[in-house]
Length: 168
Image 1 (tube, rainbow, N blue to C red):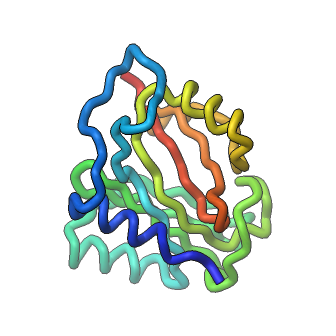
Image 2: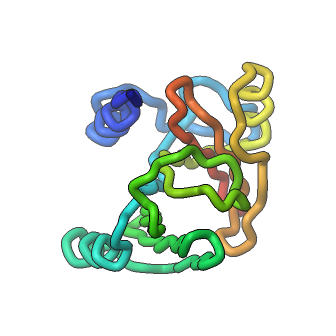
Image 3: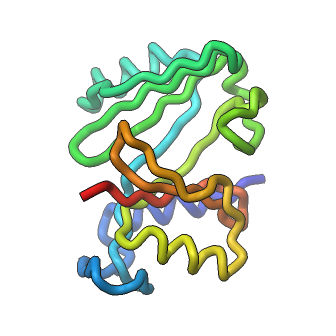
């Protein structure tokens, strides 16, 4: 059974019930207390159109990008945003089957969930996590469309945690 602690931590951070520093300096290495802000969440949907429409109609999210990979069991991802927060709605024919993400090329990907944090000095953070023997699910990569550098790791329960630094 998966841990329910990650959503609770997100709620506590959002509500301001867990302390974190609002200070961050680009010139120093990543350190405990640096800003960690929720940036993106992913959810799996059997009916991607219905779910995306629900978030738009009920919560005011706007669709800003769609990715379609029909060769991977009709994988489609709707990227929605509201303010600075982004939401990925991931749809596949077999979305209820929740096997782990092993690579973006793996045709057995059936859905995943993750939390993403916006950080500064992402390469320093990546090196620190590597030194701590954290399991990396992706290498550090750059995305020209989103204009960001990112990587994804796995927590002890197998939840995916993504770190993002946007281009300046």
